[in-house]
Structure formats: structure tokens, C-alpha cells
Image (cartoon, rainbow, N blue to C red; front, top):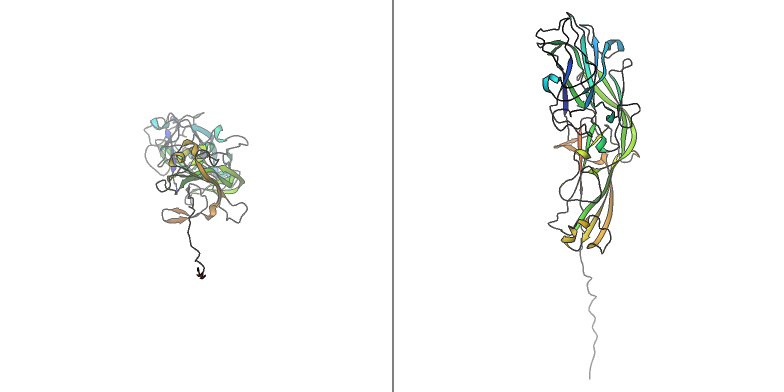
Length: 405
């Protein structure tokens, strides 16, 4: 269930310069390309089904300049260096021409000269009004810049209220201390390309449903899912980002201050659950149904704030397989109509901390972790009413004598 997709972006030169380091006369614009070794996750229309970002989607770039030979650090504001790019929104178009088509304004250029400043880059995705990048957003990301020794700053993230509007929040690894050049070296951005590796900061959650009632053995009974909700899910949290060149990995992020529990309606095929007739094949969990949630600890079932999945369903028995498979079977509720012989209403509360989570044969933590993909597969099996029969023994035989003359 672990989903470890990462996106890698590169900053690339838009001009061909033959010398190994730029001279004072060169002006090499910084462009952007994208590569993702695995598919990205869904997030409203920010979902990337391939190894590239979606065309027209934006990511935000920050850059700091330090004197040539001075390493970038986040131990203090002065160690960061001079801000070179401040949340510059780059619109992704394609990977052609070393990123020349990926637009941002105003353009930035590589420092030049005999001892050019070193540039350090990092970024996050997405950055656009639809992702909540605004003052007091109702959905999305609020970034607080570094104020001292708090690393790269922090993000207050608020999850959207529906799966369809959730965003895929990612933070890139820092690419530190680079200058332009054409040959490989410790501090050389070859041909101006500076690779970004984006990492998912949210947990991806999927709910799927089926029944174990086989129509081959019972063609007149249907299991109908009527509702499903994830409850007590934390929807607000703070992500802190730090950088330490001596650490592994050098760029690290951690969540804290999770809160604001909310309820989320589970969808199937992007639509609200509405008398969905279940089969022996799992349904739900398509891209439109996926939850991108703040990582959080799943609490024990005795805790009042324990996260849970609450489901309701009906079991309906019909007088024939024809009526059981009719279009009216899903919504039939009155016994005697539409061939309905009986109906029972059922519900269950499934605490997420009680669920056994496995990755293959390995048992995993129940907690929701960043960059982790957890699927909850729920099987609803009606228990047949079974009958046994015993016969009460006859009383002991008694004899009556009758004489007829």
C-alpha cells in the first residue's frame, strides 16, 4: 500500500553557452522542466496521470544567493543568504527545449563572472488560487517564510471538503549551491539544469466496497450500500520544512498541530453513494474518490476523537432473479412492490485503528503517513438465516383397554 511517487523538476538554461562557467557578458535565463519517475497522485485537476505535471498547473520556486564558496544553511536568516526568487509561480507547459516553454515572470538569470554567487533552490506544488494560495484560504496552503532558525519555514494546510477538490501538496528537496556550467562538478548546474525532486506530503486514502454474496448461489438477494462516511478526520495541520546538509535526507518535513476533525462522505465513481448495488467486485477508489489527507495518528476506539468509517446498507430479497436484477431493485423499499419480499436496514462503525493494514505480507502501522497510499477494502456479506429442526419425543405410550361385547 505504500505509494512512493516523486516528481522531479529541473531548472534549465534556455541558451547554449559553450564555456564551463558564465562570463560577465552571458545572460542565461533560468527555465524549468519536469520529470517524475512514478505517477503523481490525483488532486482535483492537479492530478498528473503520467510522469509529468499537468500542463497549465503551477509550482512555486524560492531561491537564495550566497557568496561564491559560502554554503547555504537554514540555521539563521543570515545563513540563508540573499533572497533571489520569492515564491515565483512557474506555469508548466512541457519539457521541450530545456523548459523554455514553462513560463514565469519576471525572468531570472544565472549569476556570471569569475566567482559568481551560488544559487540554492527549493519549491512546492501547487501554487494557484484554486489551490487556496490566498489570504485565509478555505482550502489549501498558507506559507510562512523563515523568521530565524526555523529552517525553510512552514505551511498551514487545510484539506478540502470533498475528494474532487483536494490538492496534491508536494515539497521539493533543496538543490543547493549551484552555478552555471557545461561540465559536471559538485556545484555545477550542467547546462543550467537544476533538478527538483518533489515529495508527496499527504496520505492517500481509498475506500472500496463489495459483497461476498455470489449471485450463482443466491440470485434473488441484493446488498445495497446506502451511505459511507469517514468521521473524526483531522483536516488542518502545520508542515515544517528544514534543511541540513549533514542530515540524511538533507531536506526534511514533519507534520504537527493536526486538528479540526471533520466528516467526509465517501463517493463511488465521483458521485455520492445512492443505493449502490454491490457485487463480488470491489467498487470505489477511482481518482475522483481518492482522499488526500493530512497525515495523522489513528486513535484507539475508546478515544472520543477516534477516526472511523461508518457505513449503512440494506439487504433485499426478491421473489425472482428478474426482479432482483431490475432497475427498480436498488430503490425498492416497500415489501410487496417490485417483487420485494423482505428488507433489512444495517449499519456498522469501523474504527480505523482496529483495521489490520498490510503491505504484501508485512503488517504496517494503522496511522496515515505522508506519501503512503492506504486502501480500505470493505466486504459486506449478509449472513443467511439458517434453520435446524429437532422433534420433541413422543410421550411414553399408555394403554387403554376397551371391551366391546
